[in-house]
Amino acid sequence: MTRQLVGLLGIVLAVFGLAYDAGWLIWLAAAVMGLSIVGRVIEARRARRRADDIRTPES
Image 1 (spheres, rainbow, N blue to C red):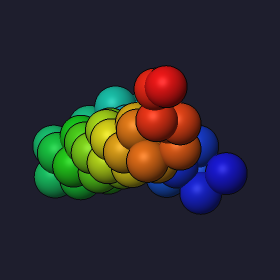
Image 2: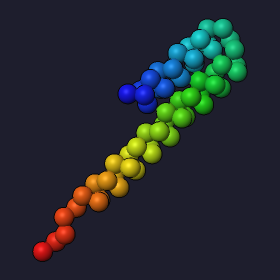
Image 3: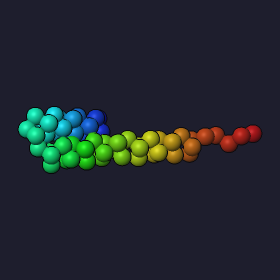
Image 4: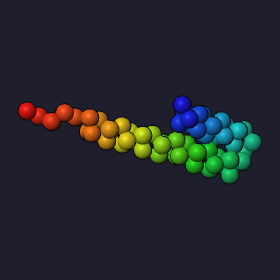
């Protein structure tokens, strides 16, 4: 849930940055969206690691 909220915050910042022609706000939005992507990658790796740990041994 928080990953989606961070991404949404990035989009909102980008829209306001474009509306007010504020370059620093657009860069901040890009950084926030980048954090959202990094969070998604970390969560996917954790899920894959958990799935590998759950495997049952072969007979």
